Image 1 (cartoon, helix red, strand yellow):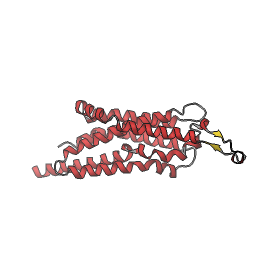
Image 2 (cartoon, one colour):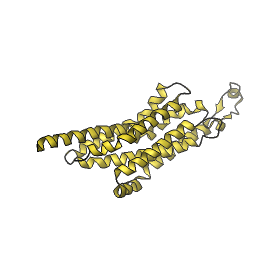
Image 3 (cartoon, helix red, strand yellow):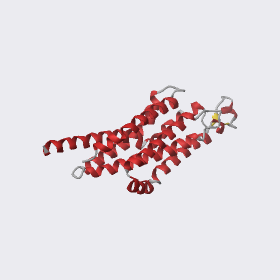
Image 4 (cartoon, helix red, strand yellow):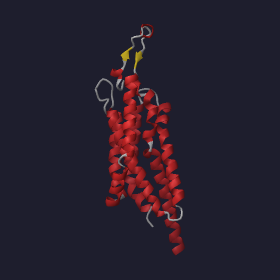
Length: 219
């Protein structure tokens, strides 16, 4: 009976690992692939008022503009997102020790949803371009919380802790590809809405299955 019970517990823990790897792949490190949107965002007029006509007569006659300032806004949003991915680590760890992984992960879900809704609401001509910064900040905070809470789950594997941690690290690195996938997959004028809709749906599913993840990881 003890052997059967131990086998079931082992299966539940490894199933939990696979689920956590999926979470990490979809959420944890997406901010590091944000640069893939630099070619898409101008199509939606995000910060297009930073583009100015060039003073070069030859180039100006061809109707081209200098949009370096626009690109810098995208770069600033990415830099801010990376900063908010790294800076809260100590605070997140302290909160996990005090309130537990489950509660902190629920807060991360709220941040994640707010971040992707902000991207969906970015629209040219409405002066809502600042929401791009909201997206990078909130999605980064949600990502680092998911990252830390997931790594904390490796303590359930006393003999395979290094292997589990390596799997989580690989899942985090692979999460950087999603913006590139969206860039190459979706046509113009469909990207922000499709991204936000897909991720909000994922977050809803993620919210309801979170308690199951915690149960699977228990001895």
